[in-house]
Image (tube, rainbow, N blue to C red; front, side, top):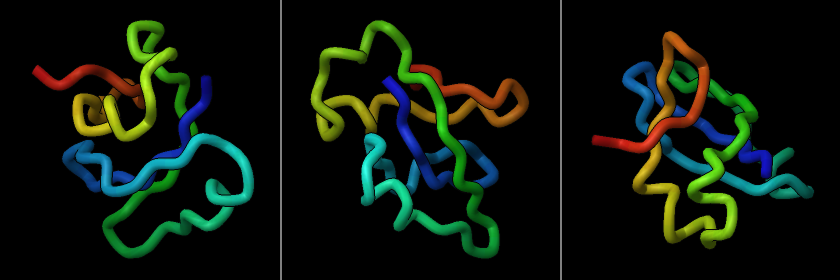
Length: 68
């Protein structure tokens, strides 16, 4: 599953969307990056609202990872 997210320089996800027209509405702003990532396998069957707060962006690796 692909997830389009807006995140800050620390990797905190500010908003997220699963494809479709809503994903096109996420636009970058100063200090915010927008990118599309593969969701970790562990979270593929979960609902978006159930896991998005448990993930963050590993900025150097440019991938979603589980928060520790």
